Image (cartoon, rainbow, N blue to C red; front, side, top):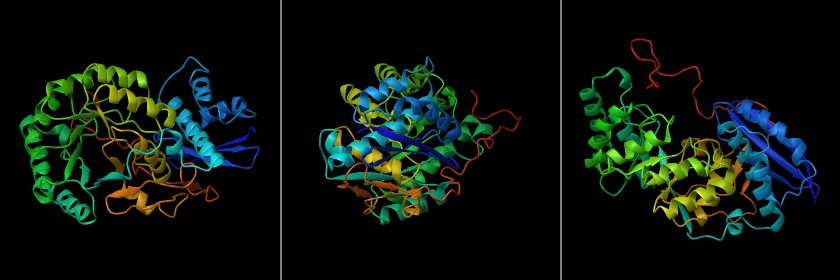
Length: 376
């Protein structure tokens, strides 16, 4: 048996891979570098000459070969490796007739806890959405409490409004629901030093990514300066070496690998083990639809330090889209899939572009003086 075709396809901001073998099977994968899907597609095209004719079962070998083919690194490369890696695991599971989690050591849990991403802004909208999520069975919600004009507010106003929005959600859902607070890398380190401790009284499960990801050391430092608030980082990190530096500097209690960016299941499994060795938990990142959700669930099922899986309303909206999961959400949980492989089918005959993020790259926040708000 050998690989006879590697198909890479871009649909809007979505990028998929299909790997076919000589026995007629197809494995599917998806990357999560949503800002540059065409670049990821181009990298996969450079993988094809190596993969064609190769044994699809040598997953770990192929990972290292693809990652180290050239002396260049970055999230575009690891996203391409991730998509191929997922497709190879899908193939192996299908060939052996078992779900991928069975190949990764077997399940340690019977269902996967979800936290719902709330799309709203402002205290009233977020409180209403949180209440609806709890009524639907979710035991955890995630939201961004920063005010819209965060880049132009005084420090005192920034802290007060962020804290008030968080308070509105906490007061609405009560103490039995976990709050995950996403700051989307919007703050400077000095702003974070004021904002993050102000959220402590609302007892969030975690606060995620207060500052830009340019420096692992700086991210870790923010976490150390706010020891009363559990910190989460890593959705934009993509190798075990980056996560090693973050954990070694005691900067995160939760790590957030994305299986579509951080090297697929082969690499994300290692990141989870690295976190376990540091007594850190895993909250898998995912916001790009059912295929990556199902791939994430394979990891969530087998690791002991998993806490909750990110779940986007997009998954419900795309339930009958090009990527279809074999299981559906049951309240705030997903059942462990029993279908062979990743448990997802992919139909790319519809060539219409997908919009998984709703944000063109050219549309980013600017400060009142015209400068880029993301720049520190």
